[in-house]
Length: 103
Image (tube, rainbow, N blue to C red; front, side, top):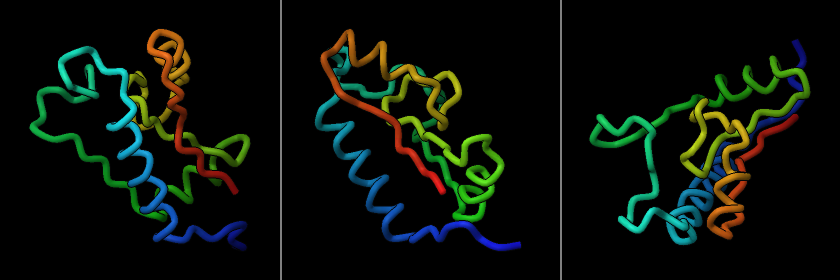
Protein backbone atom coordinates (compact mmCIF):
# COMPACT_ATOMS: atom_id res chain seq x y z
CA UNK A 1 0.00 0.00 0.00
CA UNK A 2 1.40 3.38 -0.97
CA UNK A 3 1.51 6.02 1.73
CA UNK A 4 -0.11 9.22 0.46
CA UNK A 5 1.66 11.47 2.92
CA UNK A 6 4.34 11.45 5.55
CA UNK A 7 3.74 12.71 9.07
CA UNK A 8 6.74 14.43 10.56
CA UNK A 9 6.60 13.66 14.31
CA UNK A 10 8.40 16.87 15.25
CA UNK A 11 5.99 19.04 13.26
CA UNK A 12 2.97 17.32 14.80
CA UNK A 13 4.41 17.67 18.31
CA UNK A 14 5.25 21.33 17.80
CA UNK A 15 1.81 22.03 16.31
CA UNK A 16 -0.01 20.36 19.18
CA UNK A 17 2.24 22.09 21.72
CA UNK A 18 1.69 25.52 20.21
CA UNK A 19 -2.05 24.87 20.09
CA UNK A 20 -2.09 23.85 23.74
CA UNK A 21 -0.07 26.89 24.81
CA UNK A 22 -2.24 29.27 22.80
CA UNK A 23 -5.44 27.73 24.14
CA UNK A 24 -4.15 28.27 27.68
CA UNK A 25 -3.00 31.83 27.05
CA UNK A 26 -6.02 32.93 25.02
CA UNK A 27 -8.80 30.98 26.74
CA UNK A 28 -11.88 32.99 27.56
CA UNK A 29 -12.39 30.62 30.44
CA UNK A 30 -15.26 30.57 32.87
CA UNK A 31 -13.70 32.92 35.41
CA UNK A 32 -12.31 30.08 37.51
CA UNK A 33 -9.06 29.82 35.59
CA UNK A 34 -10.07 26.41 34.25
CA UNK A 35 -9.84 25.85 30.52
CA UNK A 36 -11.50 22.44 30.47
CA UNK A 37 -15.18 22.79 31.42
CA UNK A 38 -16.25 19.12 31.24
CA UNK A 39 -13.86 16.66 29.54
CA UNK A 40 -12.89 13.71 31.79
CA UNK A 41 -13.18 15.84 34.95
CA UNK A 42 -12.96 12.79 37.25
CA UNK A 43 -9.40 12.12 36.03
CA UNK A 44 -6.54 14.01 37.71
CA UNK A 45 -5.06 14.85 34.30
CA UNK A 46 -6.45 14.52 30.78
CA UNK A 47 -3.96 12.84 28.49
CA UNK A 48 -4.77 11.57 25.01
CA UNK A 49 -2.10 9.50 23.33
CA UNK A 50 -2.35 9.00 19.58
CA UNK A 51 0.34 7.10 17.75
CA UNK A 52 1.38 8.38 14.35
CA UNK A 53 -0.03 5.16 12.89
CA UNK A 54 -3.42 5.84 14.56
CA UNK A 55 -3.46 9.40 13.19
CA UNK A 56 -2.45 8.21 9.73
CA UNK A 57 -5.14 5.50 9.79
CA UNK A 58 -7.79 8.03 10.90
CA UNK A 59 -6.90 10.37 8.06
CA UNK A 60 -6.83 7.62 5.45
CA UNK A 61 -10.21 6.25 6.63
CA UNK A 62 -11.93 9.64 6.66
CA UNK A 63 -14.19 10.55 3.74
CA UNK A 64 -12.28 13.72 2.88
CA UNK A 65 -8.76 12.74 3.96
CA UNK A 66 -8.97 15.15 6.90
CA UNK A 67 -9.19 14.67 10.66
CA UNK A 68 -9.81 17.58 13.04
CA UNK A 69 -8.74 17.46 16.68
CA UNK A 70 -10.39 19.66 19.32
CA UNK A 71 -8.39 22.46 20.96
CA UNK A 72 -11.26 24.30 22.68
CA UNK A 73 -12.13 21.56 25.21
CA UNK A 74 -15.84 21.79 24.41
CA UNK A 75 -16.28 19.00 21.85
CA UNK A 76 -18.76 16.22 22.68
CA UNK A 77 -16.54 13.92 20.57
CA UNK A 78 -13.23 14.90 22.25
CA UNK A 79 -10.42 14.50 21.22
CA UNK A 80 -12.06 15.01 17.82
CA UNK A 81 -13.57 18.37 16.89
CA UNK A 82 -17.35 18.61 16.56
CA UNK A 83 -17.49 22.33 15.77
CA UNK A 84 -18.20 23.42 19.37
CA UNK A 85 -15.50 26.08 19.05
CA UNK A 86 -17.85 28.16 16.88
CA UNK A 87 -20.27 28.73 19.78
CA UNK A 88 -17.35 29.21 22.18
CA UNK A 89 -15.74 31.79 19.88
CA UNK A 90 -19.00 33.73 19.48
CA UNK A 91 -19.64 33.86 23.22
CA UNK A 92 -16.06 34.73 24.26
CA UNK A 93 -14.62 36.61 21.29
CA UNK A 94 -11.96 33.89 21.06
CA UNK A 95 -10.65 32.54 17.75
CA UNK A 96 -9.94 28.91 18.66
CA UNK A 97 -10.14 26.32 15.91
CA UNK A 98 -9.22 22.66 15.55
CA UNK A 99 -5.88 21.06 14.78
CA UNK A 100 -6.50 19.71 11.26
CA UNK A 101 -4.44 16.87 9.84
CA UNK A 102 -4.90 16.10 6.17
CA UNK A 103 -3.30 14.15 3.37
